[in-house]
Image (cartoon, rainbow, N blue to C red; front, side, top):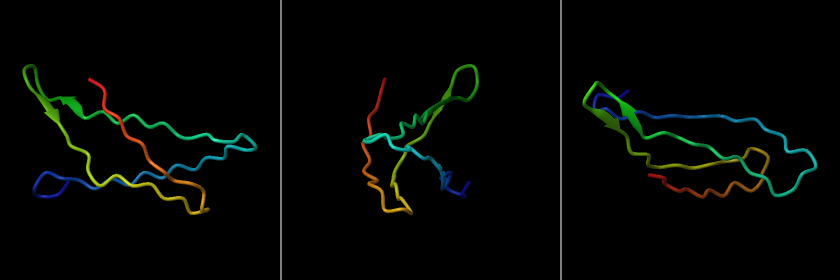
Length: 66
């Protein structure tokens, strides 16, 4: 964590879809965490990007629930 409270995260996922076409990976990232009995911590996600070292399509769709 940086002095200003931000952090930089890198996640690497290795996946082989085999012969199946048009698949994707769904990733759920919680943004609210219990801090104590009366408060939660809420984080903001910015700068999300996806890359594929094999040249596979790496489009991103995001959504928010609740």
